[in-house]
Length: 562
Figure 1 (cartoon, rainbow, N blue to C red):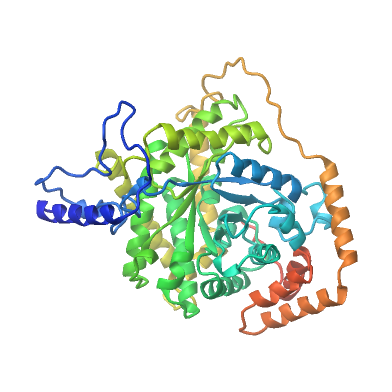
Figure 2: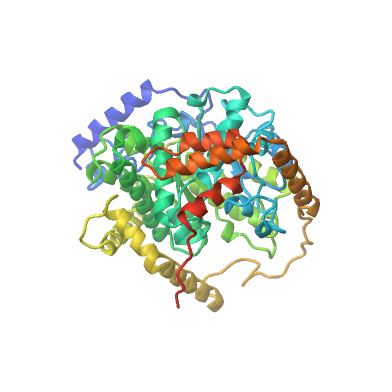
């Protein structure tokens, strides 16, 4: 790019920056030195390839979505939490919000994630242990008691039974008196990554995609600010993928959901802004920054050139980040504070829109109040003390960061091509990327490549080529064992008792009729969300709704592979 083109771009950025709202804050260094809101090539100097870097708030968004960077608005501190029953988790949420958290993120227990009630035999011993137990809309009411759902953005990390859980969230908001059309938040709903990595599915892919398509239609029409899909790379990375695989598989899944929306006749400029992303931030500092920058660039290009989006917001890749749980160690767990801080800083320098920082004891148990506070304060130290909010994309133009961004992008593009090849030459009713994803799931292509990457890394650890402090180097310590949070068995007994009371006190005929209507709608081309909402209002449980759909659609069994 020649010097005149660069100067024109800077002028466009300056005009947008001047017109944008900025925070009332001190944008100087610790020593009081003023800093510019963005930096670029020296005036009058050409920079080959600068169109791939650009300016903040301008296509291809390598340097961020907004001309102001974090000067306009800092990232949302969205701490992930959930344990025990709804009342216990509600107390933790109030602690997080009271300590400066800007949004909530719900962790559900394993029975809820699998669409099972707390009294299901398969739930025995699991209720409330890795997240909060939610059986009915009444649990969701208790979860957010005293928290204004119309005024707080809420993320829910659940995919298999995401749609009925979302209906419970809507009914809880409805019972608070909220105007549902104004709700803002994010539902994970990403079923592709379940087959690829996490394995929390209910049905075959096609019925899940039908429900997701209904949800996209419903939200686009009824709740325009709500994001019905958070396409997740986090679990793919935690399963052992490389950074490039995480990026490519996640964006490919996102392209699949774009194809799903288009197949439903939806306008890409309307539904694409409702897609958000969820990435892992691992401990290799510069690789993670490059990954985030490449993600924005790839998404913008594909949405414009492949899927025909024309509005700016449809080209924006907005993402939440969580620091890497898999990087935490049970050995010398206090070291995890350092790892989490480095990973959080990488996410911030990569331009994350919201962030969760893991607690130091999460490799051992659910976080205690103290460790959860340390995790929250880690973000606040970065935000308030380090100066990282003063300059947009401060590493933009770094030879290393730009080269790494280009390399990760190129690797991702090679993976996209292979996924599309998996789908074959024939047309798919949803789209070519979707066809490749479904074939890759069926053939074990994704899981095989992730397993190979995990094996290569483990070999490097065992040889000592890769090092983890406290694990295979610097293993001496004077640290004592941590006090960890333990979930009492009484939580499960109480949850089952309350559920039994709720079932005994409801109109059983109304519940049965509502579930039958929901299943009947599922046999047509009609949208299932309104009928599912009616079942939830009648106090149908999560397990009853999911069991009715299992009876209708069957249960997915992963093929045996050797």
